[in-house]
Image (cartoon, rainbow, N blue to C red; front, top):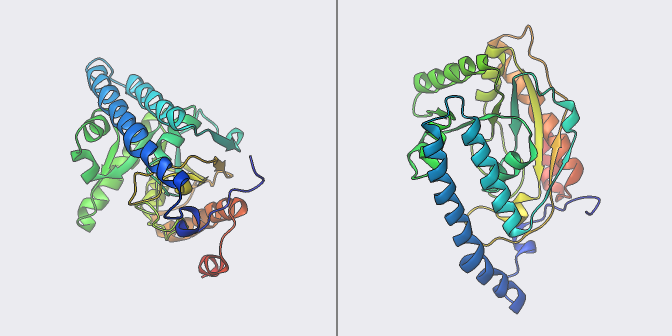
Length: 272
């Protein structure tokens, strides 16, 4: 693997022409993408059946890991994990990670050896198969329609951490359109303070180059998951949410930008 994974503009990565480019598109559209949908439907069905006999979600988490391995194995992607030893797997943490691609979730499932739950947008729970799996496996929906609804969702998420299960959150709220770090929302950090759980900052590098937004064209490449030092929240209160948010964003930015070569304008945005 190269010493650093370059995070270049999409136009630099994907020239719109050439035989190799079009063969790559055909392979994605007619082989890989259909296989991913087949994996999703079949394993989603098995996961739903398993949920009838699985009160704690372990079987469903296992199906999610299998689904992830099959997807990444099919497209020839391996995830290199750096810093995993920093996580105490016996404690409940709030994992926060940047969001670049639809391949982020499979990358996380294959990389982390612990059972975790995901805080996800409520509308995702209405999708066939994926939404059914999310609901039955105990993933946590977040409503963003009103302050009251959002607060209720966040308090439910904090309460769920009493089961000692880590929570995975994408604090940007959605995938990056250009492959670069976005502003963070504060929900994950409110949850961490309410639960007095450590924040574990993590950075994914490389998934944007493989599958960015608004395309199903998969182009395999290297992926890294970088794990930072946990940030304790013991003794913090909700008035310090913004402070914690910015501290975690800086930690993730330091991890991400240490492995990605970016245009100068993004370095300036980071400082702002």
